Length: 109
Image (cartoon, rainbow, N blue to C red; front, side, top):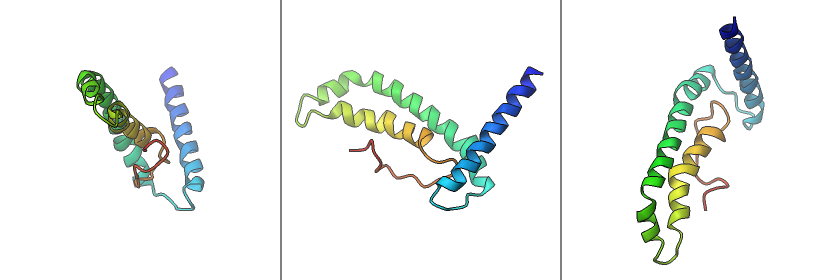
């Protein structure tokens, strides 16, 4: 019974998100295959790449620190942006079903 309740709740949340994103996506109508591909493939892979990027950032921190010694001293910011921020924004900030992603939004500088 608990499993059914959780499944039903997740379906309702997904349907609510689909309805909200249809209106917020610059008037474009998104089709169900795009939404399913986004939910089942793109978001989980984006989350995995965000976690892998975080681990890689920690593993390469000593080398990034050495790279920060030279001008312009922004190696950590750039590495964090590429390895963690961009995949996280791809995963969590895009409207559901919208496959157009440009890395020129608020976090990229």
